[in-house]
Image (cartoon, rainbow, N blue to C red):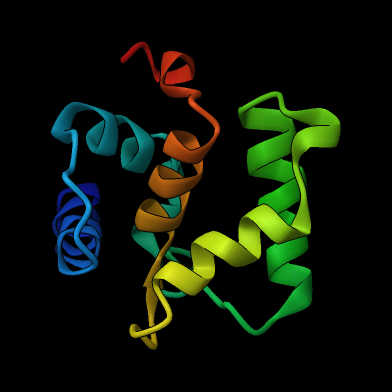
Length: 110
């Protein structure tokens, strides 16, 4: 799988739930996933695996977005809940929604 394929799938999920997508931000979020774009499993977020949700909170919200104590389980669960209709939640879509939720577009220069 490629970054371009993940961008496309993430955009489809976001648009299906009514999000007006900033293409430049989505592209930077997905390309920022690096090697996770090459593996189907790594490009997805399991909304039912607590250790996966903890990694999203710690590594993405805490480290990438620099949120520290603002990085909460509730924020991750809220965003994952928005994508509940999808059995396979694209990591790019989850990270995009979290970036917008916290107003951290500047992390990506957007």
